[in-house]
Image (cartoon, rainbow, N blue to C red; front, side, top):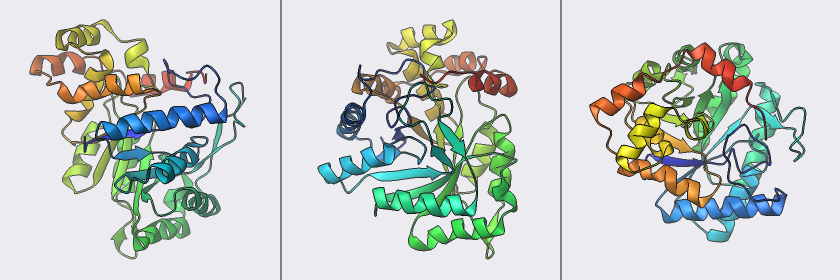
Length: 307
């Protein structure tokens, strides 16, 4: 399970844009903490040793920190992200759930918060959803501050979103501080609906960078709205469409770590069935034909509701 991570975007807050979440009937803090711990226990028992969180995932860092403290696991890799602030106030009907800001003050504020909640556990700290128009690219002080994390033994990375992910990946890996690369890791959206970043991720892997892939199920669309060709392949392999979608990620040239976002142990088990799937060349060809125009994919995603 060294190429599987569990992400807590769907569990650290009561509302998210993921379709088909399997959550407690009451989404108060104690219930969501308990649900998070259940998923983490199931993941650890299955051999998963990587957990991905973010400052904007509500109380995900807090929930993970309490789980680590209670269980005493010292062999879990933790990655988190800064750049978005959760403002949903634990409401399902909030007008705005998170606010983005890529500035030096926001980085310093959120890194301090992350360290407080996950002291000594953070292996990788990532810029959250870096895009081509981010002010980070023209802020030398922020770039130098990020690079400084490596001196404390923390790997520095970034995640990407939007139809120009490939441009962001290539540009970000060119950034330097004191003559050294700032970033050594990238986490991008790749799934059978949106594979456009694939060549850039392969280049990054070939250059020795760490590659993670998020939104492997297209925010749940590849399960709740699974296209017929995907369903047929899943039936042939005796698994659910989620397992096929994850297997497609694991089969990519960039050999990424696939970040899963289950909201229950049952969903996790269904996702992990991907590790037993061996896609044929014909399977991969069929899945390749499911690719959508990147701009259309991201436009559709932007209209998904929080629930």
